[in-house]
Image (tube, rainbow, N blue to C red; front, top):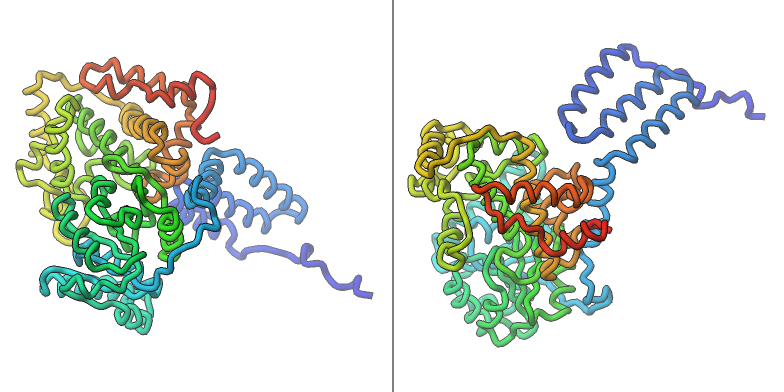
Length: 505
């Protein structure tokens, strides 16, 4: 009658070396998921199964689960899960908007960005034609793409036949006329409006009607770029993050005249090439780079007031960032920020900056690519080695300003850096550059190494409490060496505090 069959729940469950095994498992898990409480609790649950009666084990596991559900990490990850899915929805572009067919892509520029962008499409099985002005630039670009794929083959991440299929989808040209059949063209040329103008006039001449013309600009005015063509409705910004074949974020910059079907199409294409796309309006630096500029300014003021680059980086990395502002500058190239600041000195002379980064660039210390930036680098390694001359340069500059250094806590470093992102983001929301607060969280997690277990700058501010954020900002505004004007709470932030509301309702 079947009742004689043993129940699985009553079978004995043990591990011959239980205590040693679970201690080993715990250490492994701790190293791999230090900011997340759940994986270590999984080990506890499995261990309980080997030591407790079945019903007691189930009750123990349920207890763990309920407690984890209320942790800030759980809230952050749930928020991120919904935020990532919500990012692809654009309020005034309905789901059923007809989309243009994207069967082939052209990429202009075979440099780091161009090559990385091309790889995304090759990986998705979409043919790409790459254009450069000189044959040797094309050859270099091709060699880099091959090298990237070969490294994946060596690591066993990519099969040889897959690699060959992808390379077969790639063709190159030196003539704009050869691009005319592409459904989407993305330019990744030098960040200079004159250079972009020349490219878009050529594209306007050769591309077929209905082709989407995209710019990979990270700061320039997409409306101005669109105005170089007779078809501004087909122009859109597609800001990939470097390295473009690795980073998940794609900022889709919507110009004043960008057509709705263009927006719907590029959001679908983003999914196809496995990117998390976030829509941004047109402004200097869009969402991510506009915010990072304020973060960088605060990092500079901290040096002036008494910190070393290492102290600032360590504090924000302990908070959970992938890398601090100075290591990030060295990775991106300090000359990029220098170029932006030179532009700021002309356009916004009243904007305060620490001069240390300029002094560093005047020494030619541009970062990893020159082997020397805020830190020193050994060829072939990414380890940041503190440099005594840089520290002396900061101290001398501080002395020349008559500033007496003070001891600055890690807490102050983290708050000034993170809240600078939050306040600028509030302005961005107010101006309608971002559709919703959660979009900004997505940009920062996937594009800038913000810690995922904190859910992004906006939801982190909600967790701390916006009232508390504003109180800290008022404190920073009293610091004569900081920028009091910047710390004035953005009108939206002040309004949310007054109404007792949060960014992510």
